[in-house]
Image 1: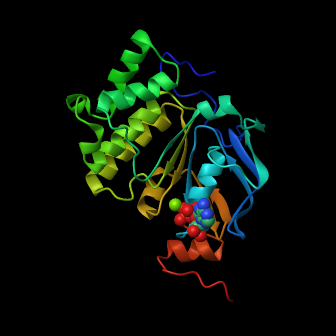
Image 2 (image 1 turned 90 degrees about the horizontal axis):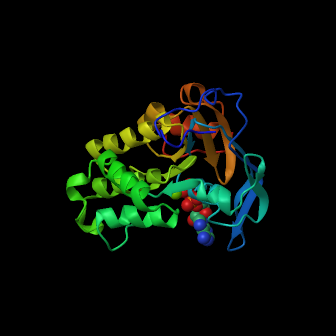
Length: 259
Ligand SMILES: Nc1ncnc2c1ncn2[C@@H]1O[C@H](COP(=O)(O)OP(=O)(O)O)[C@@H](O)[C@H]1O
Ligand SMILES: [Mg+2]
């Protein structure tokens, strides 16, 4: 059990690759408009590790993330959270950050407060978490600004701090730095690092090979709605065994499946 009084305390023993999965998908499938978009995904997310989800545009990365987070109902298969079907309680232990942050038409502080209220925090505990999140995102001086006038990088830092303020067990990030400059990307990666150091499991979709190398422990490579390859980042990002992953890592713009 995590010591909630100290969010920076890593969970002992849970870094081991042998630890039981925190989340799994079994035969996960999703269709729309008469097309099979996600097909037979058997994924394993290990606790306290950083899993990077890679693949070309349209490979199904965002759909896979939404299905794992329970934002969409699968057509086939299931999502298991610590071995049990995903339910409301499990979903409350998860958080997600999108490429374009979704901000309420309120101040920076009110955006944080709203998320904390929704998660049932009140009084001193809520005020403490609010202050800590502002500090962590380096937004204390901007607390009273309307969130929607912040720069893209500041909004994304706020989105991350808001997600982390509720201390999720797992954080899904869908291309969180895709529209940010290098300095803002670095600030967001620093927040992701801090979350990981605090024992939060990370599942990150990215198109940035450098980011995958900097942040990834495990890789899931998707192609056309299916798993092309999975494995430790150290292997998949240097010696991929599947055609799609090899093409992507070599920087080729297109994978030709014909032999
Ligand atoms: N709600 C939907 N209805 C129909 N097609 C969809 C829907 N959502 C996604 N798709 C299609 O599913 C495929 C995978 O989408 P997505 O998961 O967004 O890809 P990625 O994030 O890897 O770029 C794409 O071909 C996309 O056009
Ligand atoms: Mg996407």
